[in-house]
Image (cartoon, rainbow, N blue to C red; front, top):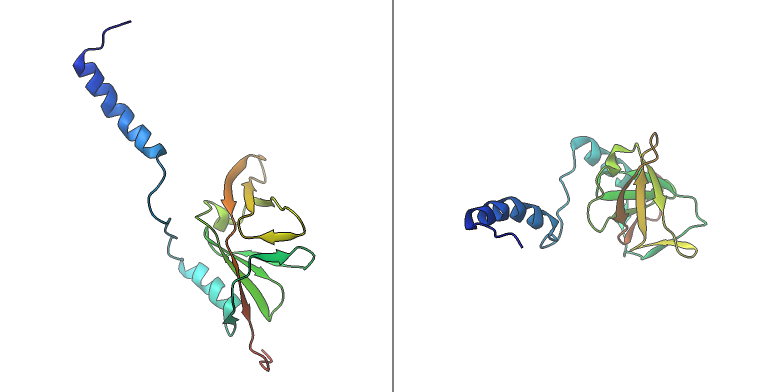
Length: 148
């Protein structure tokens, strides 16, 4: 076995240490990036005049939802003008906000649920992007009697 000089070992450690540190899991809860003015406007427009309800774990897949990508951290599932579900992802999903890639949801059973995975696929190359995880679904409803 070749003998390693102490200076060589120190130089190797200096190069390898940052690489190893970059692979270590992040500590604490991942922080969502602040919304851009455009993203904040989209979120406000969809939730304006609606009241948040108790979070639910799943949405029935038979219902017709329009998926709106607000940011890399927030999805909206719009069922109607009166009901929108907000989903704060469990961690960020890099590239989701660009709205260029196709979302492929891995669904088990007849519902889309918190903890379900989805990944992004580039439309032109077909290359698979990041895998992302759904959070709970918070319903936002127009109050009863509100005609808007």
